[in-house]
Length: 217
Image (cartoon, one colour):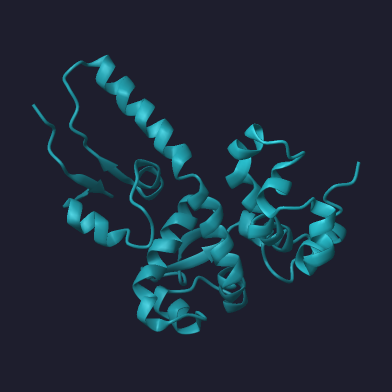
């Protein structure tokens, strides 16, 4: 017998179609479900502990499959300056205020709360009351997000953007091919030449290497 196909979001029930609409910004998965408070009841054979074990195993696998969404969402927030916009506002910012200030195509405003939902559950934003005595809440920064502010003395935002730049993430997509070929590094496999040679032709990579002393020994 199959379990009912439904979702629970903060105590309310959603249909699967509603969940898909809610998460158009990203691929819906148990990993994201856990982060945004959504739990899906799956169709599993009766078996008590075995069913629970299978659910936990699938959640573990899916969590790793979709783990890249965390870093990409954070990169997006840094690139768009969301953290700095809210910080400069000086107090919690409502969704309406954020969208008005947001450097974006306004037709995509419905995706902003979906992105913010992920970042809240990652601990980079929080919901807080706009002011004392008011019930309205807005987005506010956390200690972790302060380290990603543009003007913060200890900001690691440039380092984040460097490490998540395609020129440095691309080698990871070629890891299995590297194990099978004669190249000395995955970088060589991905870009067709050694890192230092590529840096001579790619100013962005050359900047990262010298700015962050990436490969010193």
